[in-house]
Image 1 (cartoon, each protein chain N blue to C red):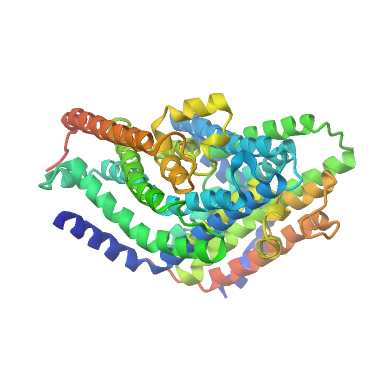
Image 2: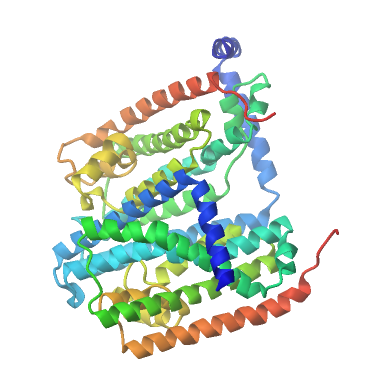
Length: 280
Length: 264
């Protein structure tokens, strides 16, 4: 009943109205964030150092062993940078989805239900994450560096595909975190699953999945489709064989993104409809 | 000893309340061990016998690093604990206990260390032994030296972590940058990539820092690839451990005077 009412409501107001509201929320969130300057600088420096450490480790390995499962250093940097580009959009706007559990667990989610506006919209518009800006800067610079060092010269079609892949990657990561967070509607807690997910994310960001065994490759392709964020699209753009040996899997990235979005919406609706507050 | 026992019992008690967390942590550890194993297998298939090691020695090193990390990292919790007490303003409760603060912190953390050793380390060892071609120590003596070195490494880590916690009393919040510090520590401790693979100039810098004594010292002893004699390595660890504990004590004496308890 609640869902039906929410739907009717949304139809009456229209999608544009909701989007305008969302950007208004974001504007407020940015202004409240800008009050903490030193935090901002620390955060930026932290992200830069962390990523430099990761890339130096990979550099040591690849420099000493010439390549990693057929990937050269700059190709791996591109793998890393492409993931980070997708991730950075998620990090700026949707990062707090990973804290969804907290709101549900502590009964804070109620406040979104009593206002005449989509709960998801309110939740998403509540925060922007300044650390994500550092991700954007770092990701763009390493990507440009890798592009030049690999001597690439993509056509506009290839750039178009790349842009689609990046956006699909953002949608994929956002949806996975969203779905994991929404599980808390039933279980009360989902942080634990999120931590396991993070492990896979770190591995998928840093290494071509060729280094892993078959079951791992299938898992990160079919069940937790993280490799559609960077690995599969890049095997096409860099003209490399992929770990499953099936040509053209990378073209499926947008489809995977759309499927995940649909799945996420379904789970979210279900969870919201059955939500009972844990507060008093 | 009675104090230590009490802390260990509390740590175990707390841990069994969160049973899901236990399984999740275990799965995460297995994944990271497997990933490290895969990585070194691929690299050594490309260049067998690189750096005078064989494949199994290297995968043992990689898997060992992940396994040790699952309980030695307990030491980093000291800084988070202190920072949290500072944030909540409950540090005075710890000060009122009839026990020196550093000793208190050390035993509390040691309890957690043993808890994680049993709940993470041992299952990890079993997993490594069954599925990841895990080698035993190169010799019984190396095994014994490894255990001593591992404990000394933990003390070094504790000292670093305690000093980090002290920083939270001065700056009030370390959470915005401490995670970066730990990632640098992980890198410079040789937990992921052994220091003998670092470029020479870089290795020289890393070897002059205490971080190598946390992981690299025990791990290189375990696989029989230590740089220098056993005595030298253990001595370096003892010196760093004592130095850091002394530094912790000195800093604590100074900081203690700065603490102002509000309310009453």
